Amino acid sequence: MTGKIVKGIAGFYYVHVEGKGVYECHAKGIFRNEKIKPLVGDDVELEVLDEKDKEGSILKILPRKSMLIRPAVANVDQAMIIFAIVKPDPNFNLLDRFLIRMEQQGLPTIICFNKQDIASKQEKETLRRSYETCGYRVLFISALENEGVDQVRELLNGKTTTVAGPSGVGKSSLINCLAPAANMETGAISAKIERGRHTTRHSEIIALGERSYIVDTPGFTSLDISGIPKEQLGRFYPEFTVYEPYCRFSGCAHINEPACGVKDAVAEGRISKVRYENYKTLYEELSRVKKY
Image (tube, rainbow, N blue to C red; front, side, top):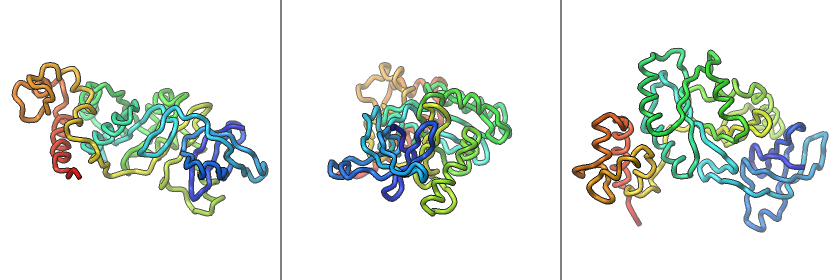
């Protein structure tokens, strides 16, 4: 029997098998001996030990097609970052940090702005211009009013998508719209391991349908990108690429150099000024990182 690890806590792995439900499993000692750790998102072969109590044992980890380091999850096809348009206002520095991290890991990213029901047309257009010009898919939804949720569901169909966002932006509300049974399923897992009410302290996967999963991750208020050399930061701003051939100097940092194609594009409105100002802030931050 095969399934997908949807959650891992304290040596237990919870494996979703389509049409049968979630099994609580131990991993065979061979994984520990070979220094292989099962990850949320792994497709596995399992042996059922007790069908009534839904208990089993993981026999084999099937080949991974991808693996993220942060969050640690396997077989993810894409990411979706959720921010509110207003209440709270989006933290663009934090949003760009997330996009940099996903670019670093080679993961396509959808940007989903929630609470469109209380936002102005101008606010939405500003966000659209800032991020669609970077090549990202930008969605506007209202989880409260169930607006745009079908479009989100269509983009997630047949894929495993890691979903992340800061607290208070409506991430849980959207997930409840996409998967109304999620609370029941996670509640059942929590009851089994006696951990009380479900909260997102660990990454876990929620099944949306056949071969469609979302990876729910803990809310965040900051993201560390200190491992990136400042000279490489521009690589993770895809909108810079088309204008870099017009820079006078090879290896242009796009900060103080004259005749810079990227700075010219910012001045002409072809690159978002908000994005560029964040780039300069992050470049300065990385410049202060000590190298050992």
